[in-house]
Length: 232
Image 1 (cartoon, rainbow, N blue to C red):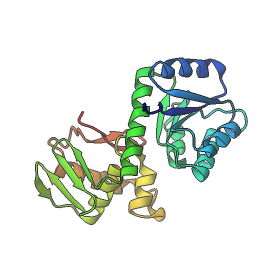
Image 2: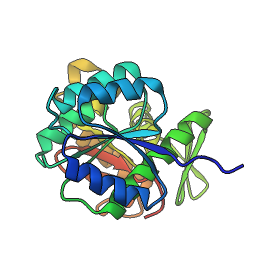
Image 3: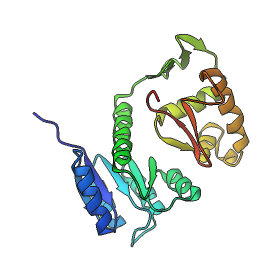
Image 4: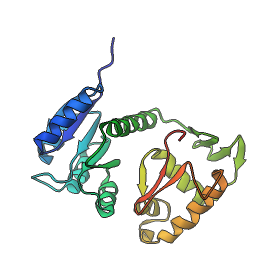
């Protein structure tokens, strides 16, 4: 029996954009359902039929960030923001609200397809509760709290390990400075960004072949950091 194609919920008020997404993603094997407003999107998300959601920030009935927060109250559906807003502030607000990824318009349909598939892989890995993450020469054993590079164990401080484990759980996706500071140091330290520069520098020296030109622990300028999901 053939497995059904993943269903993408498109929450977008612009008919032309919806037509473009439906045609391009449908041609790449995705099933599509559409919502013209945030309220319609929330109603559909509650049914649990969608595999992931694409949402615009400029909706007629609610702000996109408010939509993301509302979606997070009713569903753990992966959310990709697709918006013409390209300011770092907009990206950070959406990601901090609970979005999983952010792509600006105009966009490549090939890149959109790749981002969506990365989100599905991450969701599948989380569901399988994988305890060992492998990336190039790196192996992170989340169950035993051990990290290896080229099969040799790497000694990390507790904070370095917590940072790395957080990035592993979000592999392939950007994690904002605020998210990292809040989860590792606590809510009272969300503005202490110098902590991240110090500890991410230390992690790169321990895990990267060339810390000045990292392959795996990548900076998203002005937004946060990303652990690449697969070998670059």
